[in-house]
Image (cartoon, rainbow, N blue to C red):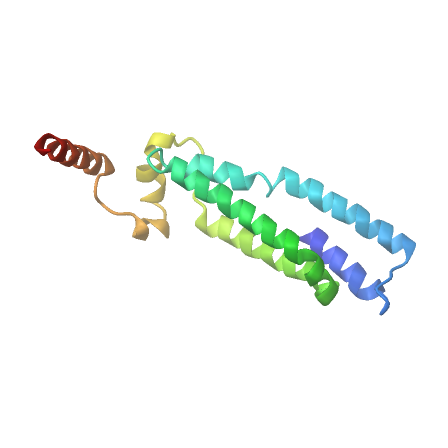
Length: 162
């Protein structure tokens, strides 16, 4: 977030009406963008892959991971397609725009992402999701193993009738 803010301030102060910027400031902006990409690759970047792999229970991991990957690719496509148009329209403001989204993501992670350290994947629902102050209201009390057994029995009964 700091990199985005610093880049935004440099561009806000030094960007001329013609869209040009001095060579020294341009070099500083390029270096800060490279530093931002490097820091992102070591921090927020892998979270799109790490969080689904650690938080989805085994029963829904495949569907959850496919949704996470699809959403990741969709939003990457949207950002890639809209970035240059937004840069032309918003100029320095685009860096403040993305800094605000980094702040939103940080607040989300701080308050709504549960800690999974030391929790086996098999116990994720009971020990993490059903205990979390926010997500527990979305968890049902039924036993998914019992539901699965019941569905298998019903399927077997309908097959034997045919």
